[in-house]
Image (tube, rainbow, N blue to C red; front, side, top):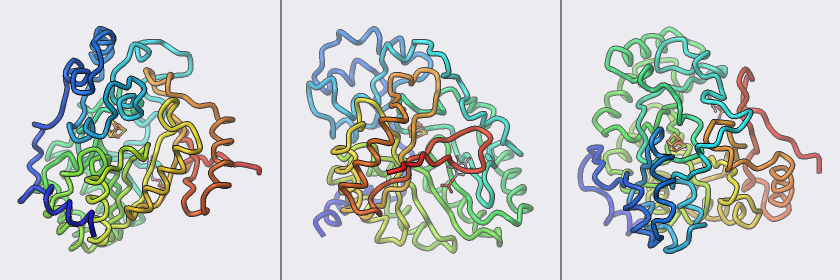
Length: 340
Ligand SMILES: *Cc1c(COP(=O)(O)O)cnc(C)c1O
Ligand code: SF4
């Protein structure tokens, strides 16, 4: 109840218009806001040249001040380590370019496809496997989107479309409404899944219009949000997620296992418990994709499996995410199995 009351105050009154006013892109401003000195500024600037720094103000507000090891800050502040070349880490670790029947569609797994709605994200996570993705070649112009929808209408064995990106919720409610109408008109589609980090990092994105749109859809809405640490889920994010749940959206979470951020059992258990409080079930815990610039976040498989054993001991089974790795060429995500 408390969280519902908060969302009523923080929701924009009308549609989401894609306003980027509240996004910080200057490393110096970020450091100033969290009260850190600028000793690491030159490295931050150098590392943000290829993949710019981008972080919503609402996310910065959840950070601890004057703490260079804050788990939220570590996810967004560009650092010198990103420029290291590490063997085994490449620009396109998943070879996504090979699974693209038409621009904007990724078809790797049976029955479901990814539709790239936009190349843009409100936040740039430094470990992102799409940090080198050639978005310009897949940018969803109107023509390309029409061609992708045409292709979907002909693939009668596909029942679920996954809106992806970039972050699909970084487009306006108006564009989302048009897209939803087009998808609903394709008879063999049953489910609409949205992969978005925005309800967590910019909860004000969960507009009344978005809630109404998803609630009214013929397609069963599923949203896979992306939180890596319980501290990301403050009262506003909690309220936004609760509102999505109340609108009939099935909510799941995916996290990435990140060294220095969430690579201990207590942190992961607290995340699962906080997720449940706001109506979200843990779905995936991803092993890092080996994308160039992210090697400093890697956790070994051995440690990851050990963490999973500890989580199983601490939590009910439904609060333990599936530990997976994405491998190019596999027919689904690869489950890392525990024997114990
Ligand atoms: C993860 C992913 C999906 C969805 O897989 P689920 O097992 O249904 O969660 C679909 N397509 C691609 C390319 C993916 O990476
Ligand atoms: S929100 Fe998702 S797609 Fe965007 S930078 Fe972060 S991990 Fe990558």
